[in-house]
Each structure stands twice: as structure tokens, then as C-alpha cells.
Amino acid sequence: MDHKTNTTLLFSLLFFITHLSNALSKDLCNENDKNTLLKIKKSLNNPYHLASWHPETDCCSWYCLECGDATVNHRVISLTLFAGQISGQLPPAGGDLPYLQKLVFRKLTNLTGQIPHSITKLKYLTFLWLSWTNLTGPVPDFLSQLVNLDYLNLSFNELSGSVPSSLSLLPKLTYIDLSRNKLTGTMPESFGSFPGEVPYLILSHNQLSGSTPKSLGNLDFNRIDFSRNKLTGDASMLFGANKTTFSIDLSRNMFQFDLSRVVLPESLGVLDLNHNGITGSIPVQWTEYSLQILNVSYNRLCGPIPTGGSLQRFDSYIYFHNKCLCGAPLDSCK
Image (cartoon, rainbow, N blue to C red; front, side, top):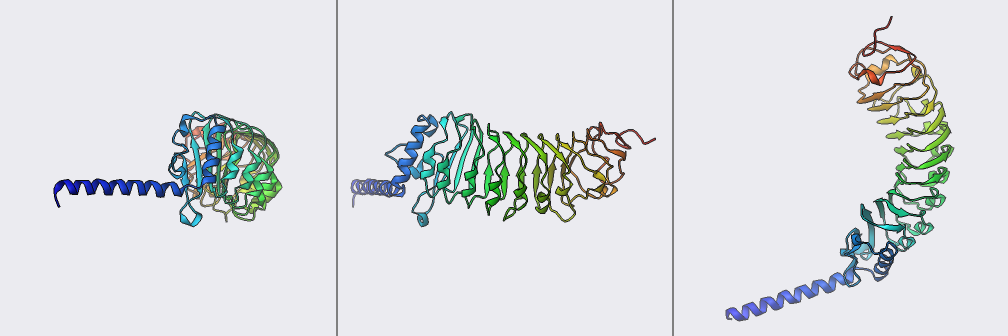
């Protein structure tokens, strides 16, 4: 066989493989999913960010998307839109991607409107992250219908109204972040009775008021952040020797409780209590903990700062503006 014949056969083989590959790849994309995605693109005013979303190509190859394997017939399982020049409202058509497990709309500051009810059709959704947008309206009660939801992040939006108690009905939820919104009202009492564990509860930078539900003492959090609200009363139930909490931030509220009676979890690495009305003294037992970050400034604490452990390695500003706290790194006690 001569060189010319070999070359012809090689090109024929490559041509066949290329077209076979294209044919197979076209078969991967579910036609209903593709039509839904094209509706989403249109509702977002056909942004350049979604230029790869072309009806003649396989949607499983499109930017921002992921399709599942053959076990779910290559249906779309993930949609992530991040930091693009995208305007419009959160597309209701997103509810027509029935196998979607992950939905992320993040850092899209021209995205407006409310969270659509159609999202409740996403029965397989485990991960919902809608943040750094201009979404308005409430945190919807109907989110409690997403029974497989594990991660919920609605931070950095313009959401208002109260925190829905129905979120505590979600059996698999382990992460809640509703921070940096305009939420008002009290924390739901039901938040102490999640059917599963909720190791992350972040409600900071809102306008929440009232006392912390005592039922929250039933849960073992990894991180609690209630900072920059208008919360009052006793929050000491959040602490405890038997817990495994790493970070507690209650700063810039109006909490009032006796710090002398607070027993920290051995696991605690971050504790911020600044700008409250907390009384009592710093317990001697705190010298036994390996705190990485501490701030108890702007409270009503009294007595000497216990010596030993990590308490003296912090700068004086973390103890400033208390009623009569003294000892290194502050002025010596008289």
C-alpha cells in the first residue's frame, strides 16, 4: 500500500471518528433540558456570559453546566452562574430542570426580583447558593419543600421579612447562611429542633431582634454567627463543655448574661462578644483553651484577666472599654 493510499485512509478514519463523536455528543443532551436552558438564556437577555449556549451544540458541553452520567440519562445536574454581566430576574424556568442538584447564582448584581416558587419542583436539589445579587422579597416559606437540601446560602441580597420557621423541617440541612440582608423579627424557636444536625448557622448583618431561643442550646454547631443584629437577653445556652463548636460570633448586639458562668467547648478557636452588655468576669478556666481569635471589648466585664494560656498574647484592644477589667495586657489591677 503506497503513501498516498495510507494518507487517504488516515483522513477518512479521522473524518469518521470526528463525525461519530459529534453524533454521540449530540445524543447526550436531553432535548427538554436544552429547551429549558435556552429559555433561561433568553430571560436573562442573552448575555455574552452564555455565548456557548447555542442550540446546534450539545448542552452538556455548555459553559456553567454539568450533566450527570448515564444513570440519570445525562440530564443537567448543575447550573452555576458567577460574576457575569447578567441582568433580569431569577428565571422561573429553572424549575424545569428536574434532575438539578446544584444551583448557584452568585455575584450577579443586576439580578433582581424574588425567588420563584417554581424552584420547589427541583426535588433532587441539595445545594442552593443565591448571593451577591439584588434579590428582594422574603426568604420563601416554600423552600421547606426542598427535602434534599443540604446547603442554603442566601447571603448578600436585599431579602426582607422574617426568618421562616419552616426551614427547620428540612431533614438534611447542615448549612444556613442568611447574612447581609434586611431580615427582621425574632429567630424561630423551631431552630432548636432540626431533624438533622445544623453545624453552620449564619444570620449576621440583619435587623433581627428579641432573645435567642433556648432551644438552640440543644444543637451542637460548628459555627454560629449572629453578629450585627439587635438581639437581646441570654445567649449562654450556645456554649457548653460537651459541644464541638469552633466559632461563635455574637458581636454588636444587646446580649446580657454573666460571662463568669460560661464554660467554653474545648474545640472553640474563635470567640467574638464585643459591643454587648455582658457582665461578670473572665473565668480562670479560659486559660486552658487555645483560642485563636478573642474579642470581649465594649461590655461590662470586671475583675482581673486570668494569667496563663493564650489570654495575655492578645492585644489590649480586645479587652478595651469594660467596666473594671484589669491586668495584663491592660493596666494592672489596683
